[in-house]
Image (cartoon, rainbow, N blue to C red):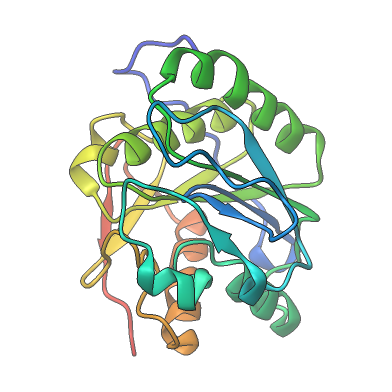
Length: 228
């Protein structure tokens, strides 16, 4: 578990190019596959996570999370877990590849266990993989956005650059993440745009990935203007 003071922000610069980047998603949105156990739908939840294959079909995703409205994401899970966007950007050559494993967990108030066991385990797996960049998303506006920022700090401390796509900037900034981004229209339950608008969703992910190539203020959420 990362134990540095909150006022210190772990930050790993990215000095490569995006065309060689292998990207992983980590998410607190309750995404899982049909053949995986759903997350508990009652408090306090649990601290388990699901591994999502990099070649998974996003249309097959299920969402089990009782602390945000994911009705729109049920029709287009890419708006909270943008794996389809990454797959398309890899085919275009915008990024090098999509990692073969991605990580999802649901709602829980068992924060001690989450931070001391689950997050180090996820961070270990990401660190040992070929991942070069990590995108993170969250479900509920408070607890999930704070926990995913703590996961970003854990991963970043291992030397892997991270960026949170935040729909709740105040909650995200309260944890002082390494990098974070939001945009006009980003909302809880549709973190990368409206269902069905894949072109706009891909523009959001492009903008997020491009942030790795520039100086960004650690501990802050950067507001971007997205075309489309």
